[in-house]
Each structure stands twice: as structure tokens, then as C-alpha cells.
Image 1 (tube, rainbow, N blue to C red):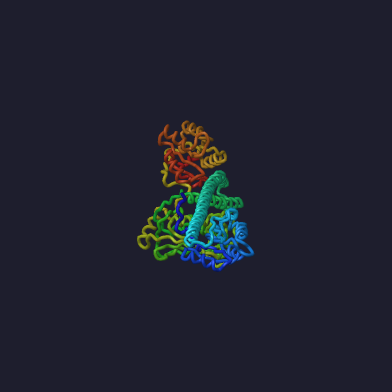
Image 2: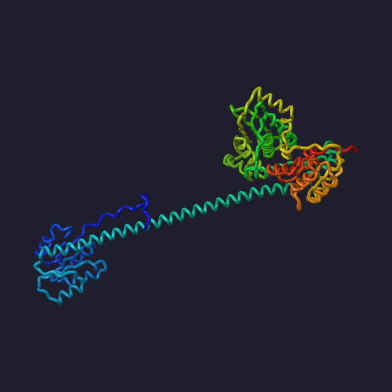
Length: 576
């Protein structure tokens, strides 16, 4: 049974059918008057015609005659001829006809009448009650037919609307399914992109590791030639600056991937923002001098403390300043400052560089997009990373520019934790413990305790399946007067450590046959807590730190390894 049509979609009830009509045909006006009198008060409209021709015109003009009362004997066109022409039209093939005649019953004539579709045959003079009774039957039949027709139309309309509703539901379901499929595909695509970025960062870090180590080794062998301004020193300085830039690009790629996948965690502490920014400025001063930029610094008259991750806040300030360096011509002016705005703190970086077109301001924080005029390299992820990190600190970042050639300003707004005397004491305590001067490095994990090596230097082990990383690190350690043993996979590494018992072992995490985590568990199971094990990898995710700690590693280094981080795990080198 069809379901009810919802009220909002129901079709209006068809208008009631017009009143049924009876066509009275006779050439004699008196007879017509008699017919009319006989049918007086009947529930039908009475239409009179005095000839067959006129009757046919009436039949052409309307289609609601319940019955035709037709005189047989008429001049020009008798009743039979009128009936034949009437039946020739499809519309009137089923219209009931009652023939009337003043002549005696003629069986041949009656038979002829019935052949033409007559439903009855009456003789004059007509008995009014008989005519009325017979006509009423056909009027009632006509009414019932009209009711059936209207019900049929209602049913057809209902079926049509129900069909349209089902089609609309199917279309909506298809659209929703297509949209879900599209969203799922976009989600998969986004996940593949994040996985690609993470893998790209890892794969880039692997070849960077031996290059960085080789650079440090070259500096050692040249006797820090860059300090004396020699040609070799200038070359080394250039390589080191570009290596630092490349390393930062790789770190940005990995950080974007971690943020997008929700895998980045903030180590929230109380941070003196002005002190942190001042340290960033001091660290970038050589880059500013190289490009002959004038770097102006505005710091607040009172210490301002925010709740944040010192490493990530350093990253934000660094990216904004380096962005200003990149888009400001040599000799330009850059201003950086920290100011209080009510219950908030603003970090701003302003330059008089190439500027940004007004219609492009909204896109400067989009990933992989270089929106500023006169692009000077970069992947277009630095500002995206700034925005994501600022949002993780419950802050906002805005870009503004008056147009091309009129410079730009980037403003980071963070919630102020507190200021004044308490902040001053906090900042002085942080400086006394080296927090403000040297923010934590991204290449080490504060969650992993470092076990200092005891006794003399002994032997240092390097276990890595990448020959270039293994050999350059060996040569650097040997240049520092350490005795070095190397292995190319985890199984060889376990044998090396068990035989030579090195004072510290640097172990790559991802190796064939046995990975670094399995190696650490094996060594801890056999030798206990004594050997110092340091994990090395191109990844730096919190999950990697956690797995390293759970496996028994004492420390964690992210490739390419910074020499300062490497030295933290080494005992004092033996005297030559």
C-alpha cells in the first residue's frame, strides 16, 4: 500500500466535476418542453437541441453528457443518422442514448436503434416518471464514473509525487554517498600527504647526516679556518649557513606533518618572551649582518611571562625573522619587538621589504604557497608552521602590508600569564639556569635521562647501516681522539658491544635484520644498565622518544646530528 504523501508535498484535491448534463433532442419545441417538464428538479443540467446538427455541435462543445434523449423522426438529419455521427467520434462512443418516437413499435427500427448503441427505446407520449427514472440511472452512473476518474487522477498524482520523492531520496542518498566518498578520499589523500612529508623529512635527513658530520670533520682538520677569514674558512661558513637553512626546511616539513596528524606535543612552561626573543635576535645577528640589514629591537620595560613551549616559541620568532630577511633587500631595515596589550603579549616583526599585495594577504599562511612578491626561495611552509604553532598556544597571528614595495608586518598575539615583579624574578631565575640564553635543542629529548660515561674514554661504538653516516661519524670521533668500533647492522652491533664493551654506543634505530630498539633490549637483557646507549634516527616523534626510553636507550639524537648534542653523551677524550 503506498505510503501517505507528506503534507508539504500533497497535491491539492481536484475541483469537483461540473454538474452532469442531459441533452434533449427533438425538432418539436412542445416535445422539448414536455421532456424538460418531466425532468424538472433532476440533479442535472438540461440542454435542448431542435435538430441533429445542433445536437452534434453541443456534443463537440462539451464532454459531460450523462445521457442523450434523441427523437428518431427529425427533418434534414433523423435520430439514427445523428446517432451514427455521434458514435463515429471516440469521445461519444460510450455516451448513453435513449431513442424516442411517436410511431408504433417496429422491431426492425428498434433493432437498428440498439445496433447504434441505444440503451433504451421510448414511445410517445412519454410517461414523465419513466423518462425521469431512466434518466436518473444514467446521471447516477455518470456521477460515479466521474468519482472514479477523480480518484484515478488522485492516485496517479500520488504515484507521480511518490515516484518523485523516491527519486529525490535516491539522488540525495547518492549525493551524500558521493560526498562521503569524496571526503574519505580527501582524508586519505591528506593522510598520504602527511605520511609523504614525514617520509620525505626522514629521507632528507639521512643524506644530511653524513654531510653535516663531514663538514664538522673538515673544520676540525682545517683547524677552524673560518676564524681567520681565509678563503677556506669563508667556504666553510657558506656551506654551514646553507646546511643550517636546509636543516631548518626539513624540520619545518616534519613539524607540519606532525601538527596535521595531531602528533605534536607542547612542553608548556613559564617563558619570559622578551628574553627568548632577544636570544633569537642574537643568534640571527650574523645572518642580518651578511645581508647588511639594520636590525632594531624593542623590548618591554617590564618582564612579560607567557605559558608556552620555549622550543616552539623560539621556532616562531626565528621563522618570522628569517622570513623578513628573505623578503627585504640588502641594506633594508627590520624591527622586532615585544609589547604588552592589556592581558596579551604581542611579538611583531616589521620590514621595509617587498611587501604583499592586499588581495594576497589572506593566503600568506597557506602551505606550499609563496604569496609575497619577489620570492627568494623556501618551500612555503615556514609561515604555515608559525600559524599552526601559534594556534597551539591559543594565540593568533596576523599579516599586514600597505602593498608592493611598502614592507610587511607580522604580529603574534599570545595570552599574558603575568608581568611585573613576579615575572622579573622568574626571568632572572631562568637566566641563572641558562633557560633564556639557550632554549632546548630540537635534536634531543628532555624526557630521556643522559647517563654520563664513567672512567676513561675506552671505546666508542657507531652502529648504522648507512656507510657514509657510519664512516664520517667514525672519522669525526677519531679526530677527537676516541677509539671507534663500527658495525653495519643490529646483529653485528650486539656482538660488537658484547665483545668490546664500549663506554658509549651510538645506534641507528632503523636497521635490517635487527633494529636499534631490539638491539637495546638485547643489550639491557645481557649487560644491564651499565652501557650508555644513544639512539639515532631521522624521525623525532614523541612516540619514537617513548619507544627509545622503553627499549633502554639513555639518549636520543635526531639526524643530522649537531656536534654539541653529540658531545653531551661523550666522556672527556683521552689525552694525546
